[in-house]
Length: 169
Image (cartoon, rainbow, N blue to C red; front, side):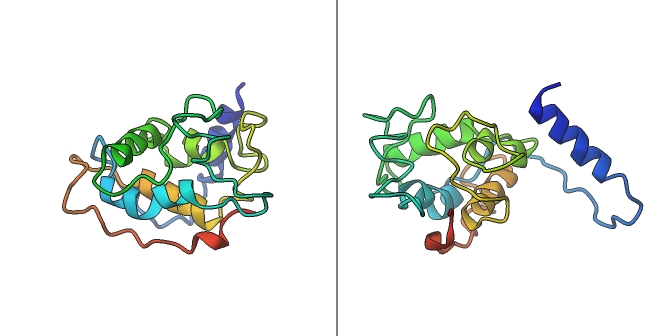
């Protein structure tokens, strides 16, 4: 049984209690918000990774830079500006690694996550998020959780940018 299947099974079993009063939120759209990506997710890719020597960033040339990165299939432009073709390319790259049906199972979150929930050994850049309580992890998960019919919908643009210096190790 795969690691993800085990996690999903464990989460399903944990949710079997009778004392859960929350109604599930129905996901309805087929895409994610560009404005929220620009404000709250893309800045995470350009931030210096806490706990690393030097000036390591996700979008850096040694990692996921579209021009010179060695970070696998996830390629992004560093310092992409709002309303630019580069920010849209970053949006589509990130969306491609987001799981719209189960945001917490997004490869965008699991690869850099430390511990049992991570996709162990696949992120050669090491652990970035110490746990699911990390502010950057939560910002990406929230973005991946808001499905809309149109990437520029009226419900977009309401994320709250985080203090990126509080992210990671």
